[in-house]
Length: 317
Ligand SMILES: Nc1nc2c(c(=O)[nH]1)N[C@H]1C(S)=C(S)[C@@H](COP(=O)(O)O)O[C@H]1N2
Ligand SMILES: [Mo]
Image (cartoon, rainbow, N blue to C red; front, top):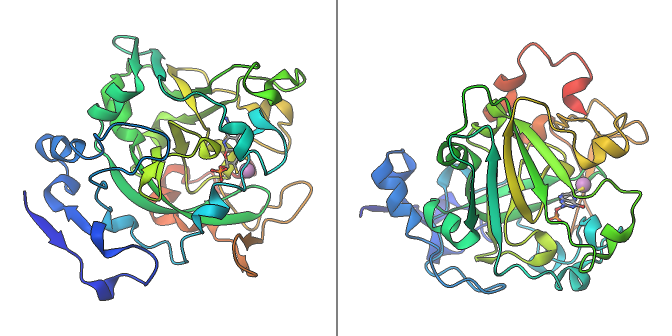
């Protein structure tokens, strides 16, 4: 295999550590052989917070989020995960979730519905590291060094039928373990969805780790989605089911309060939430408040998906 090493000057301090600044260029450029080579990474036995060995390669296209990475201690202890309560301090409660064994169903409009052990899915997918900005609809943000694989790769693996228009994701449902799920006024299980066009865009990442390790329960172990240009509530955690459908899925928050949390939920500083401004955000771990960017700064990658629809309110909530 041929590795290129990025010069240290190309990377801001603290953004990455030198040991994993490697990238298999051929794999990045696509091609099945390359993808298979990348798939070899991250095969170490999975235990909560075990380091990936070797650490999957950092994707140079997403090596720098323009701000410092948020401290791991903050990221893993300041969370939205309503299954474990409505406060941000759910990390201890979430630790009770058993994530091994774990299986994921792929069903609906696909060639062959199947249920896979999480380990088998992990082995089949090309793992990489990407540093993404993460913006909650509540107007706080952080920067996270995720480990995962492109959702586009999973769509390919699932072999959807041509009529499939949307991908629907579902979180586990276990009220015995998750106290929030005993609050029956919420529409459990948590559901989210994206269009097929969004799902096959290169940005969406199916996340299995962060900070070089397997995922914290509080962050959605063992498998969650991250859509960096959308408000955080779209980035569903602890996924057990992925379905292909011709009907637009109704998300958990949309079901609860559709006037405030719509299907598209693309970040836009100029479209306020009905109850507060989205013009700026609080950067967790700092004293800073910074201006929010349209599409959370990822317009170059995703604006094309919404061409001609920008003037209406719908794609913003
Ligand atoms: N299953 C599930 N997924 C979820 C949520 C949730 O309550 N349950 N909260 C969402 C919200 S509002 C945000 S901002 C992000 C938070 O992710 P983080 O805790 O890793 O920062 O997860 C999203 N995914
Ligand atoms: Mo959020």
